[in-house]
Length: 530
View (cartoon, rainbow, N blue to C red):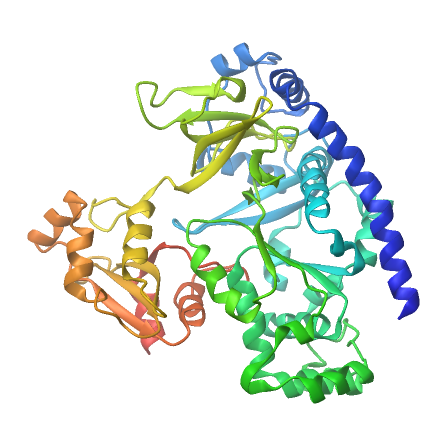
């Protein structure tokens, strides 16, 4: 144990030197936004085969290069994955899966060496900022959630273009990161998703030095606590005997975390009726999560289980790229990562696309990113407001996703859904998601509120219907009976219910996050009830 403590201290000490170096560059250039961004664009254009006009300046780039999205790029990316041609001169390391939840499109995002370096340019200053705020983090280990993929899903990510000669993963920095991980990466080799999650929880429970948890959504932490509460004796057995028991075939490539002393402590001090998570992880200081429009209610729920822990949103990270990072209590643009442009969404300049250095406070915007994997002017559906500047770097507040859900052309927006869920969430009851049930014209489609806990006076069909009728197209569709009356699906475990409803057609079913507005087919709806 003493050796492990020394190893953790040495690893953090070396990593902090690296973070400090990257942070110095980030802070030093806060007033050099346009210069940095123009250099970044030039580097990206020189490495992208999609730059067919061979432009090198922003003025030429904005004039000849069309805006893109995954629909426009999918053929090109699939051919890249199949080895038919490349879209980037930078060496391809891997592909990652991304899912656009509102429209159920699976995306393959190429990760090149240059793209990974861009992500690191955001990661390092963010972690430097965290260490400035939370000095005790360097006294323990960290956990970063990585979604489990099935064998068939991993096969989808294989590419003939992947560069095999240079092993990026053998860098000193990666070795240091691995030395302070609470959970080994090979837990994802489990043949069963539930066994992967169980093994993850076993490693977390076994680690009394855990100081930082980083996840995509607070709902994952809730899921982990449910596993602990429902499988506590089995977890203790794993720690006591060093065996996965009936899960051994699925976890045959993962060594179980045997720790008899730890198992005895947990058995004697943790009581299932009221688990004290501060006793399980006495050094845990911070839970970091990706911010989205409906995370606040889950953070409040977690505060009850972790009353002494700090919670911090990590900005907006997507598989396609990073937009903002938390930096000295602001969500600042990760200006040293990609090249950013923004579409103005309101006012007299609505629809105009401008570079970062033309933004001003109050602008409502949506980003387009050009990145080191060769993809240019890629439009994201996130909506932000410019609220401040650090030097010349804009600080952005996430508002919501731009696009709406349709059953009959009513265009219900995520913003309206969020307002409805907030109106319905009173006391201990939580309205989790507005589900749009597509019946494929078999019968009238309808909306349904997924509700966890005891119903309150606001939560009734009439109130929901009247609230949605603020959207005039919805009101018209209701008046002529194109859309049926809304419904309420009450449950004691909203996360599990939501997961079952959306997992039937979701290939990345290990990585589900509750969305405030979600379209579901009548077939999946009926499967849940059957």
